[in-house]
Length: 344
Image 1 (cartoon, helix red, strand yellow):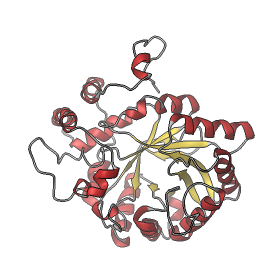
Image 2 (image 1 turned 90 degrees about the vertical axis):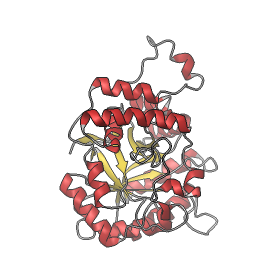
Image 3 (image 1 turned 180 degrees about the horizontal axis):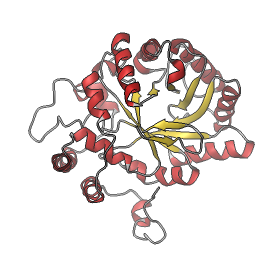
Image 4 (image 1 turned 90 degrees about the horizontal axis):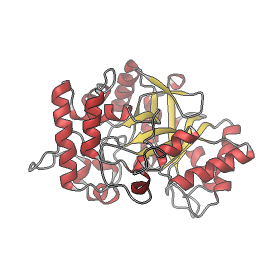
């Protein structure tokens, strides 16, 4: 397993990270993802550790907190062998302040997560979404206090815009506080908006990208084909998942799937393996979060590591998945001498 530095930190993380969206299966969204219980999760953790994947990502809101409890049970007795990331910002309780990134909410959230996980610290704590109600200064200083208290080792964010992230980094730098070393962002062959502003920012500020939903919200599993019905088991069968997930034009999706099929045939790899491997070539990507309903899915995803697409194959996938850029990025793209595509 390849390990990469997480942004500007000294922490090394594996190229793949197991996400726990399939753990618990509670609620209208997560029940369509999976219902992995503690024994099944324990086996998945076993397989990950055997493959060198020691990084596990969860959130206080996944399955109403059940995902954290299942992960806690699966790693019991081997906390020293794993890295744990959790997240908070979305509503996690019925109280007025059980939401957002205020000092009150973040402290309450991390205490709740630590109890569910059965640990006294998390390796990475990420703000799950920007909170426009709470001042950035309050959020960043509260996170720094939690780092100094030993409850968090590194801090990151998720789903931030460029200015959200840069303002937070600037405040941390100005006051000598813990800065975000990671940004957990949606990025896939059918979701490349990340490249316009967030990728150059991450490269400039040395923020490691933790990719979520690398298979495009279940669309790049190799099970979707032109004119074929959706698979019986898929998050796309849940209307809730479709409503809150990324929207992808059907013809564009099949255009990318056709290109993936061709490269998969050339390499002897599966469609998901090719889609994941493509991400490994992208600038700033430190780790890619994969999900699994069962051991078979997990082992297939692990097969994305240990080989590499050719430059020509990467170029073909780039071309098939290219989309018009929004302003001002389409304008900047005409001046490649001064605005080249980011490279590692």
